[in-house]
Image 1 (tube, one colour):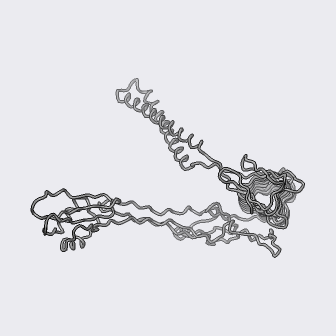
Image 2 (cartoon, one colour; image 1 turned 120 degrees about the vertical axis):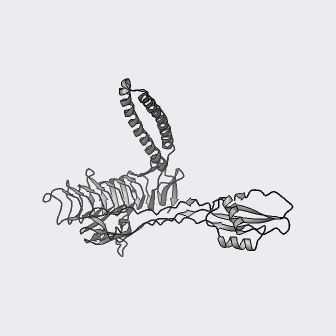
Length: 471
């Protein structure tokens, strides 16, 4: 706490009272202490106390009643609070309440035998026109404070929520309610809600229908035959089998039976994949995969792979997963070649990188404008006066200074790019056995078997190395 005293009073034989004024480090509280100089000094007045405060720049939050009491009944050698500032009050962030469930909040039904009912299509939320999807509570403004010197203490205003408005939705009632424009299927993109119209195919996708390309959700009551393509701007539901076909969905893919691929055509889902089984398929799934078993397939999964059912097996093929892979058995007794890779991410200071890159780009744009201005000045300097020559010299000097700053920023960006580490958030979880023939990688780092087979294990990455733990 800084102590600020009034100007020193010359010591005389006449008793006097010194007024010491101090303030807290944050400038929010002021204090006065009376000190006797001699016996029975005359009491101080309220006006003297105010003058001492003002001499020390304390002008706000002065407690007038306390000053009056102190002047009437002096208290010596005790520091008394005599001024108090007002702390700022931060505003509250806006919030959003969703009245529809996200994909991750849905779970497939499990029967008494513990098997998942992959024919449960209630996973897809069907909503009606004008249905309320979400409610927004708007942010509030903060209230500024003030310190005892009369200085404003800044506040933080609440942050608004990102707009949840997506396809076929709009805000109403002073932008506090999100409602649907049509009947359709819900799809989340982060906190944005889309409502997609649904296309229903009552039979198979085959020679009678041709390929399907639809902007909304697609429901197929039968199979998707060999060689055909189904593309959707939303979710795809197939109640039969997907043969060696191409499936592309911006949202989720739900296949009630399974996938019998030929390893040529590809299935791509921007959301999750749920099906009974996967055989000889080529998949790229941005979300999670839920199935009973996977055999001889080439798979990239940016979420989790959860095998649940009667077999819970993965054997053969090449599987890359960003999250967790959960299975009962991995590989086979015949030691069939099965490759599993946990995908990693580079860990670097992306916020600092973005800030430096933005600053560098802005400076480069400024250099471009100065260069264009310098070129125009250079073309007119033959017939111009000294003012133009000075402007041209100044522009060239500014360009050199800014280029030097750009070089410094580039050096900082390169340093950040060098200081990165690799992280692997995923893991391999095996309920029963991992067989020889299974090759497990975390990026380029290979897991080495100590025993012939591994049972009840969790294999994960920690502190720069692969860890073999028990499950």
